Image (cartoon, rainbow, N blue to C red):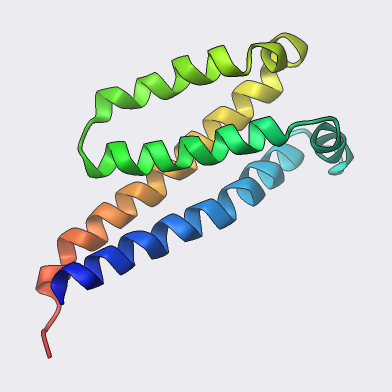
Length: 127
């Protein structure tokens, strides 16, 4: 039963991260640019769907690396993203960097909260 609860907690946190990370990145970039959301919306319509997919993969990798305590492996995400999104970096490096940093930081925070929750589960009273 304990394993089932742990799996459900991991699935719940991961689903929350995947559902909210795009909104957090989108909102913070819009807020930081002091513009309305049209610039971000334009980028989405121009094919940033690849960036969306890469961001979701980044979320999953961050959760996996934090749970595995492979913190040095987190650096691989930046290297891989730089290779995959080379064209985006050439067009607007600040936008790319801000999106990456916001998404990465948010993913690490959620993953650390997940890890803390999993560590606290044995402390919860049983049935």
